[in-house]
Image 1 (cartoon, rainbow, N blue to C red):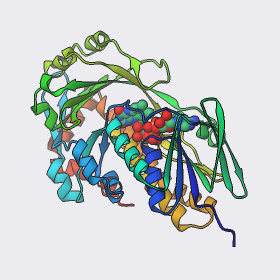
Image 2: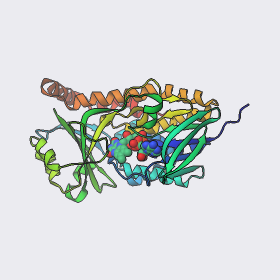
Image 3: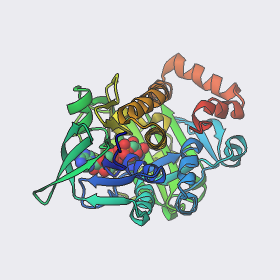
Image 4: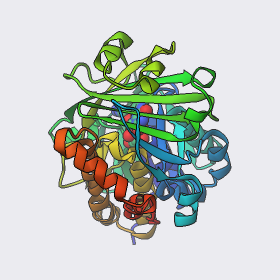
Length: 393
Ligand SMILES: Cc1cc2nc3c(=O)[nH]c(=O)nc-3n(C[C@H](O)[C@H](O)[C@H](O)COP(=O)(O)OP(=O)(O)OC[C@H]3O[C@@H](n4cnc5c(N)ncnc54)[C@H](O)[C@@H]3O)c2cc1C
């Protein structure tokens, strides 16, 4: 019988790559994570850790660290942007704990990556190699060899499989699996963190979702309620494929001039605004080929309107490790991962698209939406997420 290597290589140390490393190490593998940046990227803003993702992070022993840095909003208030009136509220907080047995948290992406990176650094079977850009991979009879560049020096890493966790602009998706590049959605997310003392405590306790025909806004508290995370999504032409584009707040203020002052007052607070162009990965029939598998945004980058990008990456990591740990043949294991994950992740992709139409509805459609939301019992609104939040792998 062939003795298979217990080593796995991961390209990318975002949420998908770091969580994959922890899940695979827990399943008994030795893991090398190669990240092109010289440090764990401190960029980004708020991410949602819904119960389906929390149970995995909790199983990895990160419950205490998460609770120390994350916040637990008590509800999502849906608000009509022009009038500032509440349409309805979806209960979170204790209601989520009672329904799913686990909390719904929001956390700054940099804090989550730091928690995961610290756990990886503390694990004897995980090596985190920063400043390594993976440039190629060659499958062979014993597994796969990845080549990386660090300080203009070439390095080789061999293992049983390569996990491509290299994000929305994944090199491995376009070069090995699906040639089509990611598609710009037409939406730009404007983001800022506002200091808590400038916005008032009340605003930090719940998530607010402001709806208007051509834009929507989201706010919630992050970093132990020390900051208000603000995101405004508007239609805007494509510019550069970068996470943090410079943003002129005057443009946004003009764009939202018809919105209620409860929201527009926040745009007056001094803060660093940046723009994040939203892309989707093209649908692909495969996520795994020749000892290589895509995880996270590399496989299924989605619009953030279902707040499930990070959660789906965390679920991918869990399922991939379970399949590689339990199925001897690597390609059979990767195929089993793809089969298990694709329908669920693609359902989340579709939900995010549907939400974009609901959030930006206008005229009679918006009036119907608001009436339907008002008559629906709040617990029923939460219950619509059972398939997402109730998943336990
Ligand atoms: C800077 C940044 C900010 C973000 N901000 C938010 C946010 O505010 N809210 C939100 O919902 N989502 C945000 N996201 C997206 C969110 O992190 C993802 O949707 C989700 O967490 C899945 O992450 P991922 O690990 O699949 O991809 P990513 O988070 O994109 O991580 C991919 C990693 O791979 C590395 N990489 C890429 N190519 C290579 C290569 N060739 N070799 C080695 N390493 C490589 C990248 O440097 C990066 O660290 C952000 C992502 C990034 C990178």
